Image 1: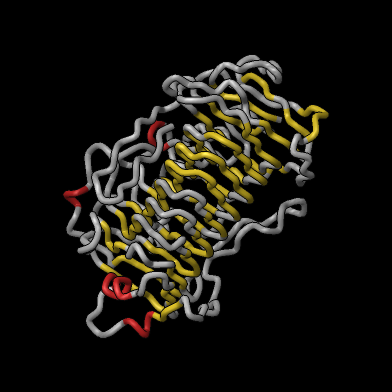
Image 2: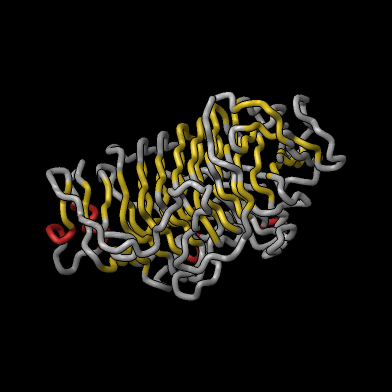
Length: 436
């Protein structure tokens, strides 16, 4: 598959090369008596259907599911934080101020809080940014709203004058909001971030060279406009670059337009060139193409990451549940819910091949990757099996050690796609594999 590009700080982004994965060997995993090597006692494996959520519906746990899946849409008013590290929007705004002007007034090291209401801006021409609608100040410590669906940040429709900036190749440099070189471990929470029709494609919230950032209780609604799983059509609702130790929790990424309900976004969330990525209770759904992706990321931990049908076709419109490219270190996915709903799914919602996870690495083997108690739909010729792709056309593919998958603390076995043979304990050739 193809994936995100280098996000810009102040210079033009550098392209990354990606490759559509071709057909290779596929395998399946049967159950062994081996215990989880980490000694964890995880929940029971469940297979689920792929019934379509409504725009305001969040996934409902089955009796054996974790009770921590998010309920994010329109959370209602939450108490605005107060104290010496906070400053209120009402205390900074004066008539005639733009939203950018208000952000520029926030003293370094302060978090700005917003009341209920809708706050808007126009165009991708922030005077302090580079093709950004809003360039967030370096010293900003964060933004706190009054609740998802209560505080809404929305770009004025059809206000862009920058259609000519959209490239025909390379990375799309247009972002609604961008923070570069942040110095305050910023926290963003409790608001909706809404994209609108602008007559061209663009990204949502970009952040670069800013360690220890936190995004929590945010709904990204139609917050990127894209059309492919590789540049320039690959865009992100939230994309980071060189942001170590970034936490995203209790967030929803709805890649449909907030007005029409049509799919408009490519990828929901991308981690790039970073380490210690943490994602908890995130729901990403209804994309045109793309997926939640980790690229050149060392150490990944997710809990209850729910992805639902993020692709709409074949080729550049394909997707998978979670994508890993050139990832290293310790990788753990705990209770991921992966509803790809591809052409092989019982639902057959798209022409996507619908693989649940993908791993590719041009530099090193995959030494410590585990998936615990995944929930998933039917995939490519594999009812009841979790499908993982290790693409054989990825340049100089180095993966020789397959990820471990555990159902209820019992390690699954891996089977080859073509001959269904058990290849557990041997070095697999590249291709597609199944676990059960």
